[in-house]
Image 1 (cartoon, helix red, strand yellow):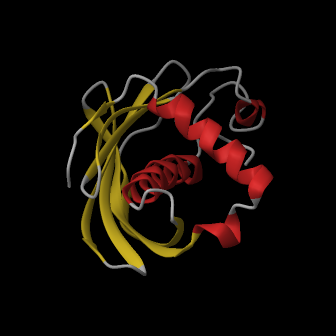
Image 2 (cartoon, rainbow, N blue to C red; image 1 turned 120 degrees about the horizontal axis):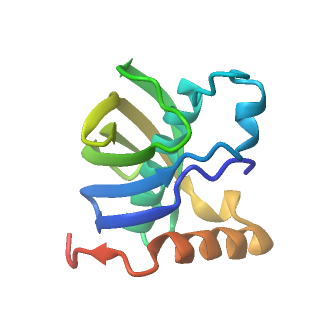
Image 3 (tube, rainbow, N blue to C red; image 1 turned 90 degrees about the vertical axis):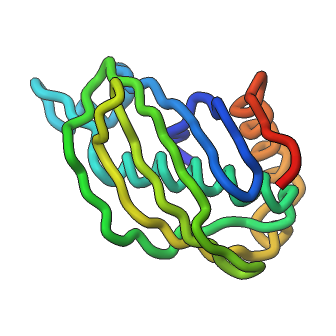
Length: 156
């Protein structure tokens, strides 16, 4: 994965909700081209940050037996530009789900101002197909870093 767009998961209620943050810095290579002189985080990377948060929520909720894959972005609106120095506050909630799929609603805020919102549909597949032994170790390490000192609500 080239871009990790979550720095920290701050809250996790398995099967229900996740909250995460991402600090946007000028040193990120995307800003060399988007846009020189007036750097703006592309909307596609805002969607990807939501996808990563949703994936973390769904995979953690399944005790890492399922791999979440984003398959649909619906009713998504971008309300403000995101620039270096901003800190994204990402919130996603599961509104429906089964063993095979889940639908989430989510929003991203900067300084308590909504910059993006939408609905996101994921399919859930057997994790072992997507995480061979070496890549599974890498993903578990990323989750360990994201979840360090996170408030995790017990029970579902």
